[in-house]
Image (cartoon, rainbow over all chains, first blue to last red; front, side, top):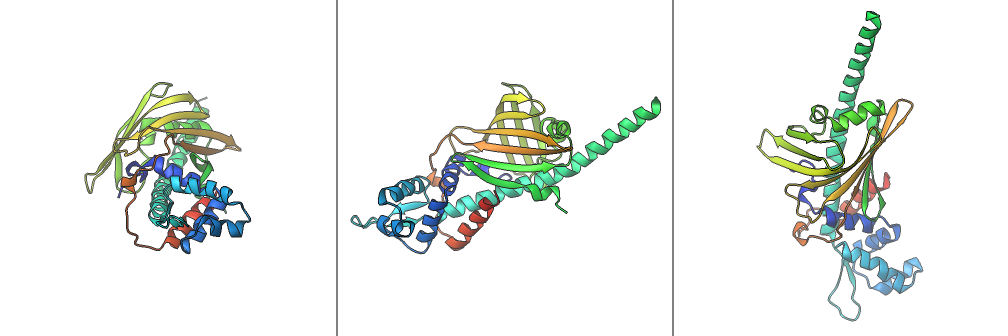
Length: 128
Length: 162
């Protein structure tokens, strides 16, 4: 198990994944694709969005490696790439755990630093 | 009662950034020291239990470099990172680059850390900015152990705490 997690994972790739996921419409598209492949037309229907608008979102998702095109040249159905999503999820968990644990330790260190400062201030007070 | 660890958040403020927010019950000056003095850094920046930091060098000035090496006693595993400080404005802001020794990605991450104090408590925000948008196919493993939905839900959950 790696320490920070992200040292062993392409930070650049993960960035593209997070960029893709930052948009609620794209997350909804992913949720729809999680149920099965869909063409651009099928994806546009529930959003009352034009197909070019959906295509723009799909391009971002494809660049992030979260979605790819199926074989059918006519329909070009899109498919969810679960591996990329899982990789991002795992990375984020490692990253989060690393910092959560480190910050908890920091809480303890800060308490220690504050109380030794107080002790020094009291000693200085008494000397006067 | 809210504990300080409840204030921890991971979010994506923009297309290219991942941000981490946490509040600490201490004045900014003390928190800034804990983030920048090697003798203090090596006491907390350790991730999970079992790791130490045998190398912790910090030349805290614009253009100065830093180097951290972590070591896990039980396995002998080591991990290192280095970078350069671009901006140092004590006690409010640090901008530095970061590159892990075994990084598979091109370029460096740029991290901005800000420290804001209110009523004796300090909020730290660390924002990671990545420069390249390329996906490395090598890191995407094929085959899934768990269903898609679970990964998706977890990710959604984590991002929604922003």
